[in-house]
Length: 457
Image (spheres, rainbow, N blue to C red):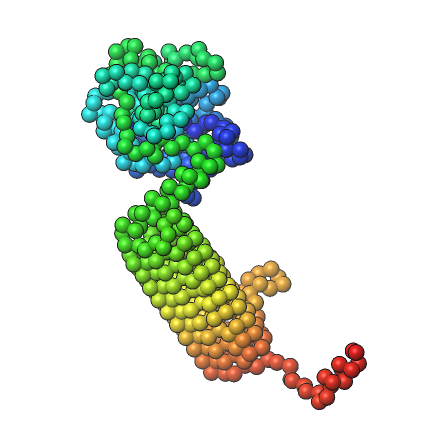
């Protein structure tokens, strides 16, 4: 689409009460400015220019990887001055002007604005919505259903304040109109700022074809100016995602308390319990159950898998028909093969855990390769971090039985079908089929307990 987006993102956002620039505050996992840029791209806009100002260096760290042009507004002198900062002389296509703090706009919204602008053959349009409580929004004043003016709430009469149609701050305009009339805007106001709304008056005075495009989606007017509004926007994005997934066959116990980022994929028939957080590039298969208070980030979870309550998974693969938890932690680089079981209070890091293998509870496995049908007893530890500050690998073959309270000092290999007796510290490789014991001999001293008690009394 031959269109340029100008995104205004230079404001300080003092009402956020935060040292972070307003447009970098995240909504459902993404900075607001990233959302707006991505939405423009999804709408097919070919060129995006972002006006930066407050803490521009920090904002640019987000913009540069996205490949958009950042234009510095030297001083915060109003919205028209911000638009002028993009070097209007170099514009070669029509323009949509948006705010970087409006994270709920969709690509469909943008396409509709541009389509209406073209169909009505307008020179300039402002996008409007009708709100039951218009509050401090500028009112859209019409005459014979045509836009006559935009009146700021603080300047409006009692009758004008009754108007429910308001200015969203989104404009669609021909490039030549911007080039000609933006320099004519004056700062004759109490704040001595140059306001973009004055462009409407100039266009009407010069008999240009101007109109307000009424949008049915009131979310396009949802600007974020406080932490309360930020939380509200995040809530709406999460609910929107949950509704999309439910339409595709995912079951939510309570969609209002499940937090699924837009990049996440969930297969049909899966069940998401309350207070679940799914983020990043996570993909859940079909018939997966995720119980309450689970956090899953950048993971692939296979079909018919059960993630039990309180489990924390990051950068992990869990294959079909496995179960994890409750209260398990799977750290980056871990792969749980099919039909395996990872129980409560088990932690794994950089582990390949074989098919049908089990680690029932209270175990740490790190930097390990574990075969099929292995039983890892309670309290087992792979001691992978050595005094030389390097990490070493433990390899356990198929069908190995590791008794409770065992330690395996890496690097070490336990070959298939071996048995490690409970309480053993394994420091050397174990041959296939061997029984390994490394315990101090048990000594029983008859009658000693009674003597000891009398002595202490």
